[in-house]
Length: 372
Image 1: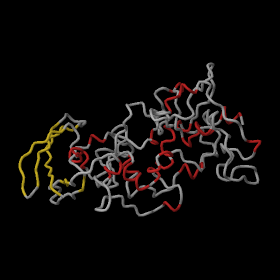
Image 2 (image 1 turned 180 degrees about the vertical axis):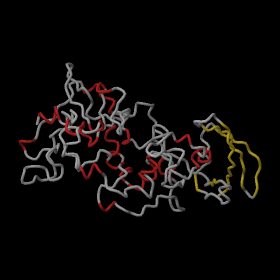
Image 3 (image 1 turned 120 degrees about the vertical axis):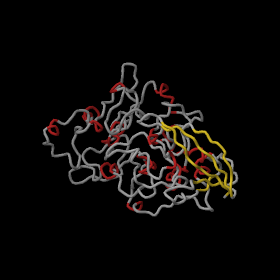
Image 4 (image 1 turned 90 degrees about the horizontal axis):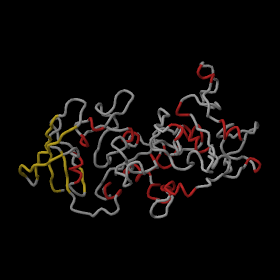
């Protein structure tokens, strides 16, 4: 048991470096093969505290490269592949009974030889707690709730339709760097984390060529069309697009029987979730995504916005509760100038400065607002 607490996925596999490890596919090796599989050894410091928290995730750790700017000295949990830093932490390892049986070799039929849960009473261990746990009081918000249990305490997010309509569409109210929920936070923290509401901005599941290279997502602000673009700007937008969402099985569930993303996972955890027809778009009988995601939003006269010019055809108009969506389309340092009206349509020039790798340039968009 101590070998798992102290050594599991702590060291690099020497055989893998020589292309000789036979436990790579499927990945069952005791050691790590890639940096994002590496786990730090959990320890108690001289003052009785843990070297890193078992509950609060680091928001600077890169899950693809396995790199944190603070290195091994980071006091927050790294979301490594399989969530092994949390599952094999002194707080949690073998402290709960596994729901799966063992095979003839005594190994878990689901998680194999490396199962982090107990399979007998003798296998159970008592959790260890931080002697200075009050120092991690940031896990409790102003209302006295545990931030790590946000999803459990708000049943609204257990609805996949609500997740699909509202996940990462509004900015997190916590100051930068103070929200440690990562993708467990349903609100976005920066432009690469942001997702346009699919019910308002009816973009395709295809990546925008200005926002994505062959294998890397770039800054969404490189796209001059802004929120009016008809293509995905971020990985979150693509994974949570109605055409993509839950259409493939979750690797964490397949390999470990556990997914740290829970209800915010874009992949299917059960066969019943695969290929479900999902239509989260607004209809006359539904509340708008803005109203769904913001319970305190005041209702108002429905208005429409749209661009009358798009390759010779009109861009579809979408129902919204106020003109803030129009401003969202031109959210980049935008100024509007009223130029007239016709047939109950009010026309504006939206003059906006868009960031680009090239020298900054001005672009003029024609937008219209009309009664619903």
